[in-house]
Image (tube, one colour):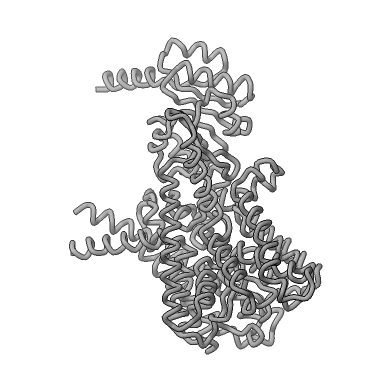
Length: 493
Length: 133
C-alpha cells in the first residue's frame, strides 16, 4: 500500500509543523513575563506562565522530533493546511488557558472561554478586569495580537515558509499583497505592527498610561476588544481617545491588501474598492438612524446620542467590541440594527469577523446584475467584475454560489445558536445580540456572558467564536479529511 | 526578484512553480483561465488573465518593475512581440523568449533578447544520446 506510506509521510510533516507551532505558542506564553520588569510585585505570576510555556516547548520539540521528515519536497494541500490550522488553534487555546487555571482564577470552562475569546479576537470576557493583575491583562491582549494576524500563517510562512498556499487560504487570510506568500506575510506583519505602534503613541498622547495604551492599541487594531477597564473605553470618557479608537478599529477592519493600496497613496483604487464603499455606506446609513430612533430618548443631548451611536456602529461593524455605554437600555430597533451590523462584520483578509463586507457586497452586486440581465438583449455577453485589492476581479457564477452557500451556513449556525440560548430562558433580543456578537467575533455584550452563565451558553459561544473566526469550511474539511485518513491508516495496520 | 512570465502552458507553469518555490515573486499572464490549472500549490504568486500583447495588461502586471520577463507562449511571433515590448518600451534588462524555429534565433540575437529554443535543445540532446551510446 504505497498510498498509506505516502499518507503517513504527509502526516509526519503535519506533525512537524504542529510541533513548530507548539514551540511558538510556548514562546508567546513567555512574553508576558518580559513585563515583570515593570511590575516586579507580580513575580508570583512567574509560575503560571513559565510551566505552561516549558510544557508547550517540550511537547513541541517531541512533535518536531517525531515529525522530522526526510523529504522537504512535500507540498501541503488546502485540506492539509486546514488540519495544521485547526490543530494549531486547539493547541494554542489549550495552552493559553493554563495560566488562568494555574492561578486558580477561572474554572476550566471559563478559562477556555477566555482563551478562545482572545485568540479569535472576540473580546467577550468572563473575568472582572478590575480584579485582574496586569500580567493577565497583558496576556489577553497578546492573544488578540497573534490571533488577529493569524497564528499559523505568520508563524509558518514568515519563518520557515511552507510549500504552498494551503495554509494561507485555510486560515482565512487569503489576500496576497505581493506575488509571494512569505513577503506578503512580512508586509502584513509590518503594516499591522506599525499601526499598533502608532496606536500606542496616539493613545499615550491622548492621556492614557503606557500600559493601557499598549493593551488598547492591540485590542482595537486586532478588532479584539479586550479592555483593561470594566467600562471599556467608556472609562476614560474622552473624545480624543474615542476618536483614536474609531480610527484604529476602522484600520483593523480594512483588508490588508487595501491598506497596501492606501499606504502607497493610490486613493482612486482605494475608493473603488467595494468593501470600502459598503463600509462607508453602512456607517452613514446606520449612525443617524440609530441615533435618531434608538438613542434620542436615552440621552439628554443630541451630541451624546450621536457620540454613542458612532462609537457603537463602528465597534459593531468592525467586530471590535469596545463600548462606551451599556446596551441593556437600548430599544428593539437599536438592538436589531446592531445585530445586523455585527453579522455583516468587517473586511475579508483583515482581522475582523462576521459574514464579511466583501461577501455582502458581492451578493448585492450579483442581485443587481441579475435584475439588469432581464432588461438586456438576450444574447449579450457581460463580464461582471468588482475591484478587489488593487485589481479587477472578474466574477464567475461559481464564486457567487460559494458566497451564497457561506452566507446560508453562517445564518443557519447563527439561528441554531440563538435557539440554544432561548432554551436557557433568555429573551429573544438578548439572545440574538449576544450570539451575533460571539459568532462574528465582536465582543459586545448585553449582559448574558458572565462568569456564572450556564455552561451550555459559554460552550455555545466558544463554538460560535471558533467557527466564526476560522470561517467554517476549514474546520469541516479538515475534520472530514482527518477522520477519513485515520480510518484508512487504522485499517491498513 | 520580480519575474513576469507570459504564457502558462506546460513550460510557463513549470517555470512559475519552480521559481515561486524558490522564493521569487512571480506573476503569470495567460489568455485562458484554464491555463492556470497547470500551477500547483507550490505557486504562491499572482495570476493575471488577459492578452499580454495589450499594454493595459502588461501595465496591470507592473511590467515596469519586473527584473526579468519571460515569454513562453506557443507562438513565436507573440513571444517576439512581447519580448520586444519589454525590451524596447519598458527597458527591462533581462528578457527571455522561447522560440521554436531555430532560424529566427539570429533576429533575437540582434535585438539582444536571450532565447531558449526547444527545437535546438532537443536536437542537441538527441545527437548526444545517439553518439554517446
